[in-house]
Image 1: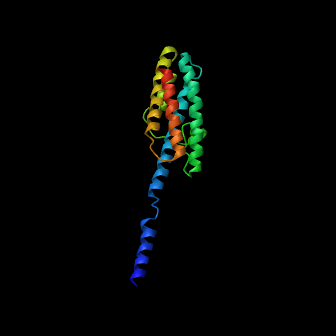
Image 2 (image 1 turned 30 degrees about the horizontal axis):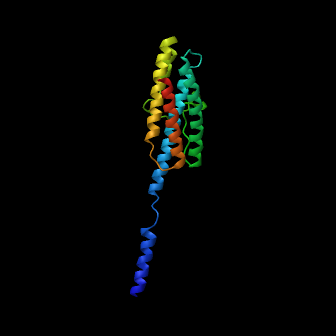
Image 3 (image 1 turned 45 degrees about the vertical axis):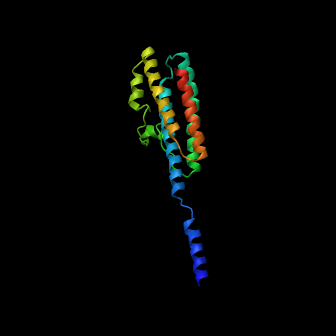
Length: 179
C-alpha cells in the first residue's frame, strides 16, 4: 500500500510538477509578434517619409542613404509580414496599405521617432535647402527610433532576433552615412 502511494505520488509529481508551462511560450510568442508588428509600422511610416523626397534635390550622401533605407525597409516589411503569418499572428494594416486611401484605418500606434502625416505634409510645403534640412532631421529621428526599438528586442525567437539585428545594423549604418 505504501509502495502504491509512493509510486502514485511520484507519478503525480512527474506529471504535474514537470509539465510544461506554456505561459512563457505564449509570452515569447506575443513579444515576437509585437516586435514584428511595431517594426512594420515603423518601416511603413519611414517609406512614406522617403516618398516625400521624390523629385526633391538632396545632398548626394542623403540620396544614397534614402535608396538604401528604402530597400532595407521594404525587405523588413516583407519579412515581418511573412513571420507574422508563419506565427499565426495578425498582419497589421499600415499607412502603406492601399485601403488606407479608401477609408480603411491603419492601426498604427504612435511610435517615438516615427514621422507622422503632419510631419510629411509639413515637408510638402518646403523646397530646396529647407526641405533637405527638415527631411534629413525626420529621417535621422526615424532611423534612430528603429535602431532603439530593434536593440531593445530581447526575446528568444531566432527569426525575430535576426530581424531585430538586421534592423539595428541597417538603421545604424544609414545614420552613420548621414553624419
